[in-house]
Image (tube, rainbow, N blue to C red):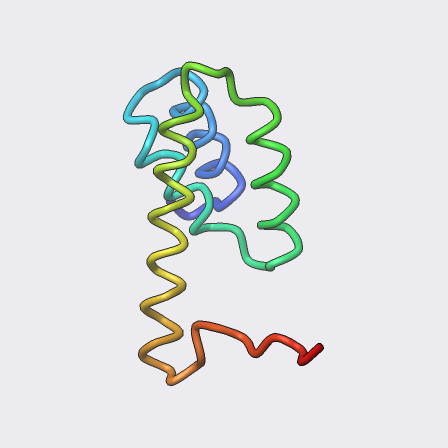
Length: 86
């Protein structure tokens, strides 16, 4: 689609109407450009997600996390952070 806002509306509608919900939600998150917007959207959508769809939502989060892990590995970025010494 040439109009990102319209694509996002369609993906969100697919998620809400349970029409290929996982893929719609996954692609919806992929199209969010900033970490701040993504963080806000993740929290907002989770709060609005009915309990019968929470598992699908969490599977989409797991999928996104794995993509981030793989990217970090490819870039040589540590997957763990050092904890401060006490």
